[in-house]
Image (cartoon, rainbow, N blue to C red; front, side, top):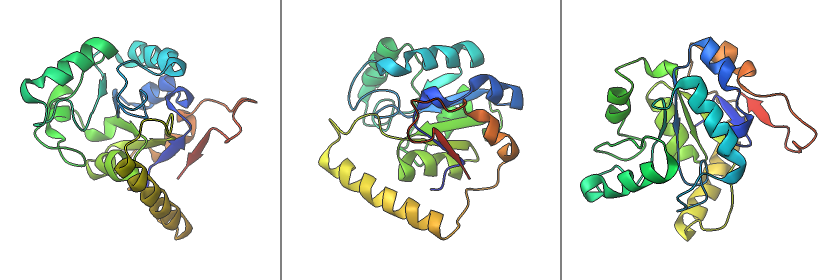
Length: 202
């Protein structure tokens, strides 16, 4: 559950540098990564970043991985279809929820190496664990807003943050990845507005 990179949000990623290093696509968690919880529109401050990602990787290579829409819970894929229409991004269909269910992503990206894909999300035990388990480069983002998170998710998030801190103190590293030497170039330079420093590498 240790990510290769931590950033404030999607807007801090340098997609051109990722593409130059060989990354071919982004897999984005939805709630509190791309949108506010349960919202059906991209967070306003991330709209430009999403468009930049689409221009860099191609409109079909920036996809959403939800833990509800596109899963067996989504009968007839109606929620996935509605989400695609609202966000203008492909929503992955799969038989299992994160941290399982990589087969839909593999099929969508034509069987390319998972090492050429980046998983971006705000949850350590679902998003980061999913990406690490399947050989992707993983990026952890801060949650966009505390408003709207269910109580169970808030509790899980606190537990995950505690575990992540413990792992960091113990020096536990993320899985080896062929692009780890390029990670420093995958974030944009910090601006005066970045009180959190913008990014952190492992």
